Image (cartoon, helix red, strand yellow):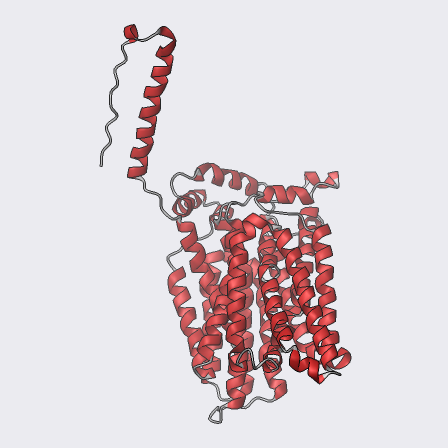
Length: 507
């Protein structure tokens, strides 16, 4: 459809002199509005392909979610199905669940440097190979040792995903939606966990492993057409390629040339290669690195893995409310809803507020859970009459964990750290997370024997409460801020550090 701007002749002789300028302004306004309408007709609004690229990368997080959720339904099937070729002992079951964290520690360490060398897209595509090898080894083995080896291999791939996928999403996004895309990693991960719980309730552990391999193939096919991170292209001196990618991701109305030239000028001033010890002493690097490590500690030592491990017993004591066999599906569904809600509001509510709210609610729910088991240990009537307390506490705990500590630490690991140090610190954060996850999983039984179940929950509650104080004092709010502003915040104190150039530009 063509628009023709109507010609409105102005007869200045018939208009009062003071109204001539007003009439001209009216005519110009009409023409401008019609020109805008014509531009909208020629270029109708489209969803930016940035979202398509992010979702394609986040399918890798779905695969990781299936991997992390695999042990619960798989080990249940192994131990209860008579025709299962593998019958793991109680100790073997704990190893199947915990070795994934050991593999993730290794994958997280080398993921950053390799992503800097090969590119974010390349390493994510190559990373589907260990996923496939691990899943197929689990699917076709007849020995428990190979199941554990397959879990370790898949764990390595999960470590790579946890570092590179949030990094890719942050680097292709604008500051307005950086929180949404960066924190969506956890949302897609719990979607994978939910899929695993649902499918695992209907198929054997062998076919569930085959499902993981199939989802890996689907994720690879979807991600293949997506572009490389423009910031990585600029670091390889391919400014023209980066401009082309930014126009593809953000649309032609985005000033890609100016943005890319600014990033290129900043990166040119940076040293090449791995971070030096002197650079690690820079406040804009070591301060966010310590904060990220602390957040990973609070994420794991809030007891999330331990509480989920204990969930079967909790639901078993609440049979009048829910069938224990379906408890895993319900828990995963609660996590999905709460995590997606957190992803939707993180750019409005802010990271700091959600983390404090998350820690406080986790602490309250664990205190209630501990009180229930403390009183129930000597009062059977109380246990029967108030059997709804553990179920309600567990659901509240999962909601609290999902809105804050489930996703935001991964976002901040990519958001707080300058571009030059992002892959290295992201790898170290993943290593720390895997170490803490392995520790909390393997020590839960020993801690329960030492402090009883109620004492264990109170210890986790105290740690969650401490996390609120830490976040309130130490963590700056990053909502709506450019990454350079965040880095400048950490560099404020010692003047001698202002002379050291650290790459921070990335929106």
